[in-house]
Length: 161
Image 1 (tube, rainbow, N blue to C red):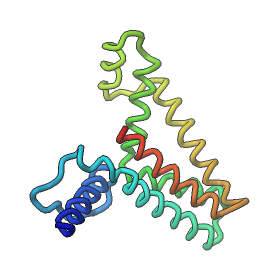
Image 2 (tube, rainbow, N blue to C red; image 1 turned 90 degrees about the horizontal axis):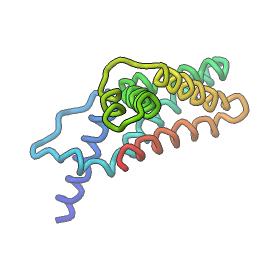
Image 3 (cartoon, one colour; image 1 turned 90 degrees about the vertical axis):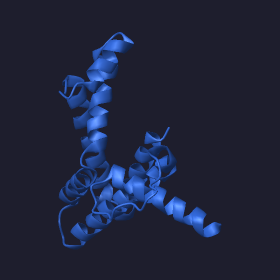
Image 4 (cartoon, rainbow, N blue to C red; image 1 turned 120 degrees about the vertical axis):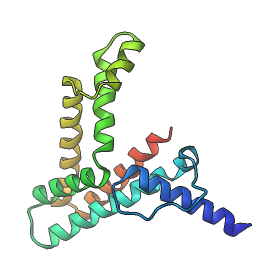
């Protein structure tokens, strides 16, 4: 019984990583869990994304790259690993929340694949703040790495609300 429970949780975590990243992963074994069953594991997918970017930041700093450049590359790596899924969602939400007055219009704006001024602004601010947060590596590489990991976990935990 415990093995079945563990196997089910591992499958759910596997699905979360498949859904929230573009990392190469093997196919899920049948029967695959539902998306709803995997929501609890979204923060684990964030841990994977954050750990990879934090390790990249550490490696770039060890190679002697300036902290601001290393931080920018670490944030870029997060975007690449996730296929910009969070950035796309952030832009859609920003456009919808501030681009429409009625609920129906807001939902219509969020479904539209085009990006508006609120979406662009949200992306610029989000990426800029993440970059500057990671640039804390100049003062404390450990703090910057913890920030990359913590924010990746928290942002994926919010997806499951």
